[in-house]
Image (cartoon, rainbow, N blue to C red; front, side):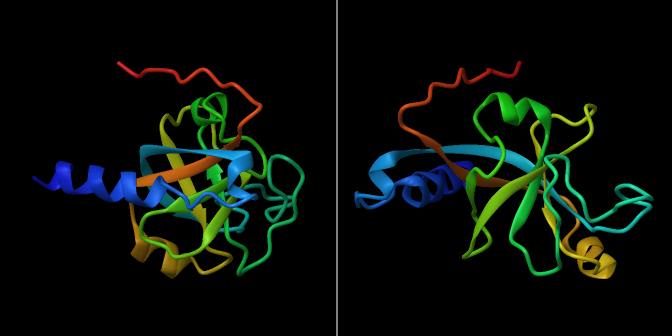
Length: 142
């Protein structure tokens, strides 16, 4: 029953009203494991903890996420718009996770380690926008 409810929520949240801007994108829903991270040396990089994998400088308050590399192949590339089912805001992909992770996102929470720990790890749905003129092969996980 919970799965059916979540599927309905996903379908409703991923269906966007057709405006000129939204007609440029196809919104795709996907279930992921989400955790949180901070720009502190022991979680990222001891030399430049606020510099993300694509070179963006992260600042507290930014609505950004890091994605596992298998999700990049599915279209969640640099600056992709992402809606996360428990947040009202739109997030942007600015960082990549370590190669060992699969089907995961990390939500950026500035330098507030306590907030990130309280968030923990959750299974949730995301919707992401890919340009309509781009084709990505969706990898099926087994």
